[in-house]
Image (cartoon, rainbow, N blue to C red):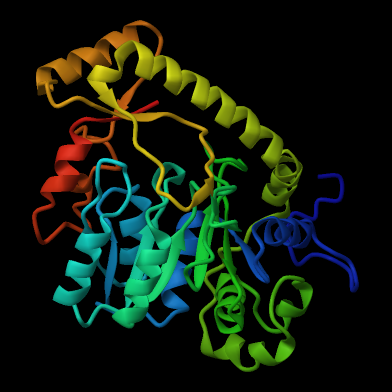
Length: 348
C-alpha cells in the first residue's frame, strides 16, 4: 500500500511481486508445480476448460449439485453443461457419471465440483475418465486443505481451481488460483490472464520460457490477473490453514456428535467417502428426514432463524446452488435424485 504498486508486474528486475510469493506458497501447500493467481475462481474454472481444448458447444459433464458459478464458467468457456446426479452425501453419483459418459460419447471434459469440500470417489472417477477418454478437471473452491489418499485434493485431474472468495478457507473478498503440473495449461493460463509480451518472465511458478513462445500473439489477454492487494490479504492466512483446520474439525465433530445424539432420527449427516484422509469441516450440512413435508421444512427453517441460527435450504427456489435456477444453462434431462436431496439438504 505504501508503494502504490498494486499491479503484479510493477516490479524491478529480480524483484518478487506479492502475487509471486503468494502463488509459490499456494503451490507449496497444495503440492503443485505451477500456480497462476487470478481475479476469481470462476475465471480459473473457465480457464481450466479453455486451456484443455474445449470447443464451442463442447459438452462438459459436471455435478447437478454445485454453485451456479460452475455452470456459469462452462457457459463462459462456450461449452454446454451436462449434469450428473448428486447423492445424499452431496457428492457426484459415480454410477450416473458412467451412464452419462456412455450416453455422451462426444463429451471430452468432466469437471468435478467438491461442494462444501466433500469429495466423491476420485479414484473411480479418474478411472472412468481414462476409460472413456475424457479430461478430468477439479473445482476445489471448497476443498483447500482436504486430503485424498494422502495427497491434496485436485491431483486426480490434470488441473484444478481454488478460491479465495469470501466464506472460503482463504479470503481476499474475490480471487482464485489455477493449479497444475501441466506446462501447456500453465503457460496458456498465465498469458490469457494477462502476461502479454514477455511478462511471463515476471512469474515464478510457471514453466520455462520455451513454453511461452508465440503465445502472446496467438492467445487473447482477458486481464483477469490477481492484484498484489488480494495476494497480500491471502498470504498471512496460508500460514494458519492447518491450525484452523484442526480447530474447525474438532468443533464440527463435537457438534455432529451432539446433533446425532439429540435429533439423529430427524436428520442425516452426509458421510465422507472412504479415501478422504483429511476433511475440512468449516460448515455443517445435513438432510432432513423423509417424514418432513415441505411445510415442515419451511417451519423448521423459520424457527431456526427466530433462534438466531440462519439455516439455508439448498433446494430453495432462489438458491443459486439449485440447478432449477440455472436458466442460462438448463438441464436437458430430469435429475430426480439431486432434486430430492436438495429438497431436504440444509446448510449452516
